Image (cartoon, rainbow, N blue to C red; front, top):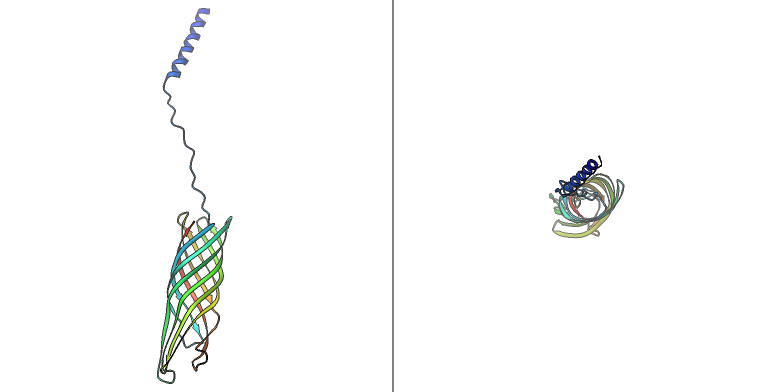
Length: 220
């Protein structure tokens, strides 16, 4: 009986040793998953923008200018939860003008009113829904105007910066963690301005500017 017990024990030890020498069938260790960093609207960004501007002029002999615009954008955002707060500035060149021709009489002639440059410096407040940002914006605006006229052979020309406010809103979408695109509308009410003062053709007119823009930004 003792001999049988010893034989069984020795057989078990031999089987364990043989199994230890067999090649393992375990696969390579599984690497831990790598997650992309969560998207955030916070940070510095630069971009380009373009669109259309229309500047209704009232109480004036000038016609209301309209045309395309193109320029650059610089801004910075802070994000807390789904609330995004930021500051943004832009500077655009405007192909925005309109000419008038007058019939016979003392004021026979023509005039042209042109907006050459547009700049805004604004605050933005937005609500983020994942990669979409809905925002309102407001701040300061200025436009560079050039007025020319020829009445009965008398020629006039005047360049002025008109200042005022900016208010509007838009939507921005992040296609990647760095590339975003936006569409927005801004209304720029300008202060009244006097043109050709001290002449028989002096006028003090009212003007605002409507901007319809799209933009592409790179976020750092």
